[in-house]
Image: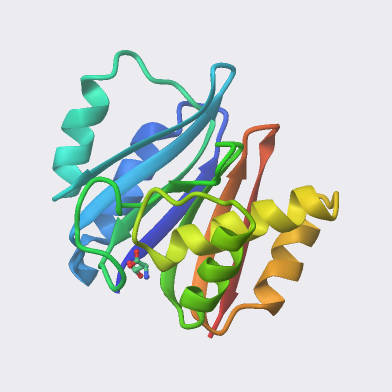
Length: 179
Ligand code: GLU
């Protein structure tokens, strides 16, 4: 069982996310990551290994500041534990970043359809399939993100908790869960 954490704050969110991930460590995990959103844009930092490795990696990236963010500890089910398969995952355009706890059971069929439509994948995860599906629907149907998430989740079989950041909306985290 992995863990997900998200937050919006007046102060820098990074330590809040790291603290949240540390509290979830007891659940077991193989990698950890965060997505941060500030004036510079939407950035993802992720590493195979412990939350302390992620913390070290963040500290080598200068003076990071963000008032909104999401964080994840992963227990791999689809794709080996490595930096690429660690969460968060970007959508193709890198406008969305998503974390996910659980399994998308019908990910293979959805992935096949998206590949046929020209979507390219970076990771082996079921999670990336969902964030790509959300972006595909959002763009194709010209929907706001919340509606696109709702439409996408109707196509998904499985149990999950997700949280998504949108580069164009620095005041919002969309979250959903099933079971
Ligand atoms: N199925 C996803 C993956 O393998 C999420 C696993 C989890 O719940 O940590 O990346």
